[in-house]
Length: 377
Image (cartoon, rainbow, N blue to C red):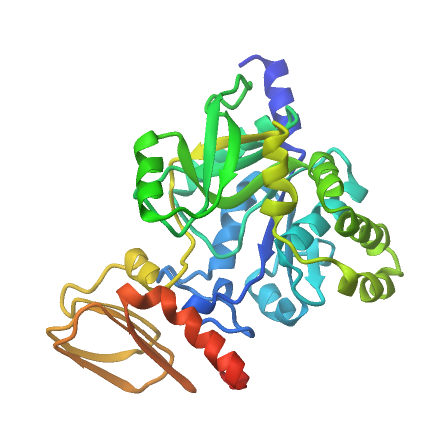
């Protein structure tokens, strides 16, 4: 690469700003994950690092301090404990959850007010990715592609016919300097049934939608305005007051009026229909840690006990048993003659299920909420 090319590349990457939406409760990980301590605040891989800390560390070499976190007011202290480098200017606190379009859209609007040339990348706080270097290479390609006027998603190369994820259908390669793997996107498709998922895998032109977006802030806001004008207007009003003394009053007045919708519906899907979406295939390992079975995938079982055990000082006895134990107490847990069990022991709630039924934990949370037992949620 010549000197001019190097300068241009640095120029493009220097416009990149990372955004980490840190929301959601992770109901399928109850009772470990709760409203006051959602899953991004936990170490679910045994690495010694919480998920949000690991997300920050992945982005830091690309952003060099240009990373914004969007989270709920209730998580301010916990997030700052995890990310002491995070400045007040880059911490965006939502008064109440309004779904991903409001969270990501507000970040885009604030960044646009500060510098309209910014290319932002949105990466959820609760995903596990390895190897980091492969992820970072994909993000660099995404930034170069976004600089050509695209909203870019990083599509995960599927390893099995999953029915738990939405998919992205590619529409052929794009010629983008600095992004040899860039592809056009034909459409986003909803979570399929088993037969359809198997057909997607056999086709080879489909990738999992991991909710990773890299886009020029002005283009993202343009599509948000076209598809959700009320949401766009409210976010732009908040952003105009964000770095002023009027922030608190404007947020208090406007935020409750904002419609709830996902970024996929508000921006990604209509932008794909307009031909404005591209994809970089992600060949790295990726897991959204959607249930306790995922924790079993991410943490090797002990050769001695045949169990995956998480929890400092966990006291577990097993005989002819297998599965996952997550302990937040000093209580002795004994498992005898039971396979693929999931036991989650906390001071005020105990979960016992199996890997096969791990996705159904969410229904227990819904039942507890409906019955008024919100003290354990």
